[in-house]
Length: 326
Ligand code: XMP
Image 1 (cartoon, rainbow, N blue to C red):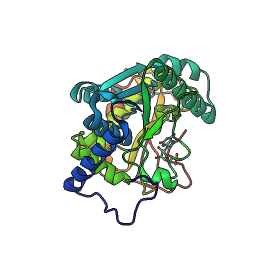
Image 2 (cartoon, rainbow, N blue to C red):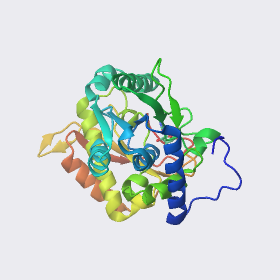
Image 3 (cartoon, protein in one colour):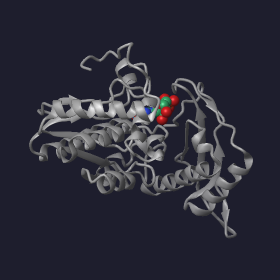
């Protein structure tokens, strides 16, 4: 498969059997391409990079070097999951970089959304490049490019993705899932033994919680957002909404209102729930969350998360509201 055009004859991968056949074919191709050389992969923990990592570990084991950059804007537990699954379970050659301070220091006081995105994107490349330059004998760069990225019809990733080749370093690309659609990547991921929750993970923007901690990010508000978001995800898991809703998250604006806690005035931020359904992220509708679930989430967030004193629900479809608040 040397061209970027998906042949008409290529059957969609819908079953474990087809996935296994694809995996076997790719394992052979990757081995033939790479030989005994080393391959570098930026492993975010998202579906595409995770599936590529698992596939390459199967094909070339320790010749793959995975770099996971924690920019401090991950959801709760995500970096830990990458370390558990790839570092421990799959025994991958994994370099974990906690760059939280670097990112948050650069972002301090920056409230303009595009500026925040730029800082996060540039710093990601910077950190990744620094790490790549420390490594010796890397000849290939693996990427979780999927077919919609090539078609540029995705509309989500094309203009968003962070990353880039280290300056002055020439790598040949290894892109084993570049002819697959997202649903096929998921089937392949499950056949490779990755956890269901990782393979069916909802989309998460490259700049992570940076686009949901609105205005200038502070550590305390970012922490509140991460905890509130974890509660939302847990409750969606518990009531079955996690399997049904395309994307759901919390945004926390940079504003406070008055509340009352333990008979004392309690100023806090609102946590805004957003839960949307869409096919292509260009338009989106609102999921109708049962009130009992909303009450449970509100009770838990206001009781368990320091600094949050209200929970709001965003009922705005796209258009007119974008999915993210930014
Ligand atoms: P908006 O807010 O534009 O978002 O309605 C549409 C979809 O794009 C996701 N999104 C991103 N995805 N990197 C990504 O891979 C990014 O930087 C990024 N920013 C937004 C957003 O979560 C939604 O699903």
